Length: 479
Image (tube, rainbow, N blue to C red; front, side, top):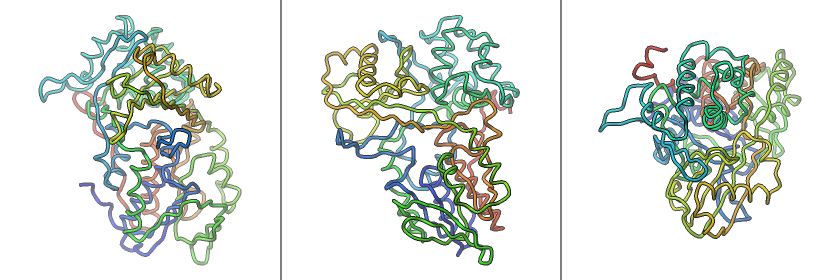
């Protein structure tokens, strides 16, 4: 059972408008509704989910995610949100990652288990790593040294050094850089190694590979993402709230006398006691001129100017036959990075549906549609020869140009807290101060942090933030 947030008893009749129905907005809205506030969740699009959503793609007449989104056992707040709306059982979990080289040679990474026993962290994946054919002995020694260095406290605080500089100073081999740091870590953070601040790489290393086997287990939705969120609307409505789709917010005004917000939309005006602005940074930037002038507004505007976007591309392929029995794989040494067998991952999917993901590259995003598709197909055949015999029945290419914000050196100073310059208005979104890179977990954390900040403002503390998983094994002594 998910623990219920402490009810805001004195604010039971208070209202809140949450602007933006991505993961940040949904997680904040549901936590506050469960705590007793009357919540209106406002979204300019016609569906929930923001950048982590699905839609009917007319060219192929299939419902597809805008990009494959994964979570890990360490994503405590995202899992808390899923438990709250009753969909935690719709996540498929795996502890093994299959790396494939062109030509088909495979290496499996994952915890070593002997019956019910797992080696203590951080050694739980050491046997599979040492046995991995994808890395030479020199690569393994190099990576071992780097992992040890990432355990040191200074790796988590040197926010002005890039991962690329750090790797070069720690004498990482070319194989280690190309097959691990660029592919596994940089693509997880969706940026080039010279555009990543060291603490974010250290965070990923610790959570996914060192702290515990549970923290590093990978989860994927067994349903299209928007279907996963279908329970949000009834959840809010059953608690006196509502969801307003296709509603664009154009501005807001604070009424000092009534201590309420007037929200102006194209459809009319809304009034509430509190507001949570749960928008991406560029949408927040566009709204700033239409909010009241307050001390601190210019600082927030300057912080937003330091943020940049990185694209993610996905290629959706339907074949007339199965090309692999694998559920997912990491593809080495080529432009495409990840393969997801959606016909096996998503319940009720017919046909033979493969999704390929290309992270951290603007060059692929710049390719014309046909060139991008042909490149993806050509490279896929190097890993799975059955592609050459299979007939491609339909294909969709999705370029999410604003997929993530960059975590470049110095970015921490540009990430604002949940508190805002305005009274009774709070900020959420994966880009605010969460300690996490641009992920669904960061978005869910921001939503819960904003909800708790709102509770403090109402002088009735709310507890909905989920603490991190505690490191296990020998990693307990590294805290």
